[in-house]
Length: 354
Image 1 (tube, rainbow, N blue to C red):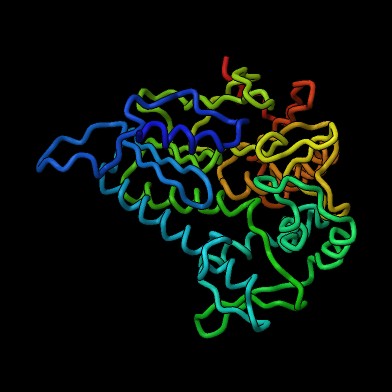
Image 2 (spheres, one colour; image 1 turned 30 degrees about the horizontal axis):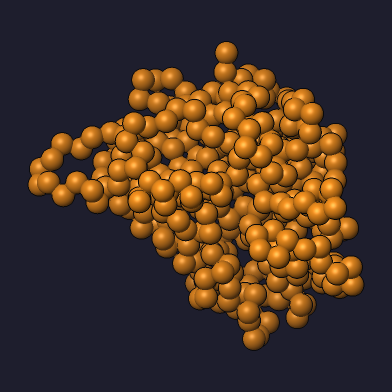
């Protein structure tokens, strides 16, 4: 029964990324072994359905059960803090506020502060205030195209200048400059959380691990044998088991945005969840997916969506500018077209596994 439940949860994961290096004991959690003085065995894994997705943390070396327990605790803490569908979370409070100013946690403040330069430099292609639009589209149940009048009304409520953040006397606040503003952190929150969990694990002495938050992959170090983790770029087609490329990943994050994660088809048209804030509809270009690799999972998360929206040519230029201004040249991208052709950003070819 347990395996059937886990299999059903895994079915909802994005299909673009899959870990090729698989642990032999993937389904064992730290609570399974209660024996006093038992020798800790690796790998050890904790699984949970949080953040509206399947999450998995696997430690291959260092830290032990205490590290895994601390990571689980932190993951639950962030689910309570940032899950938009959980009443009482910071995101829920912001979007259901009754006043213009909402007190938030320091961590939420840090996340929003970190995303603002990307929102602005992307010219609004990535827009935290896109919630009025994203809430119209239901890719799970209704799978209907929203009314055009509602789409245009939602677009009018999306603005980069509609919100801000502030700190006063050690307390942190979200400030709504427009009464209609609502935020959606779905394009970077999991990346932010993966970075935070990585910090917790490393502080506990972990030297080799993989954090997987619904397809957002964050690697700590290398495999115990000293070789890089191998992460596969899967063909962006539903049900495909084909790998287009395999990547050697050493202490970096891998995040993909693609059109086969959440979608529906109607009248022969493919409607996916990556929305253009200017048209109100799913982005239509030559791309099926964009994968970004780099040291910071939140940046990888945000960049994968931004580059997808911009398309290959503009996306490559945006990434170059980002690496010059913020990324220190460390972020690499793979642009996967609908015909499975892959274009590499500068330096990305060096990550391909031989």
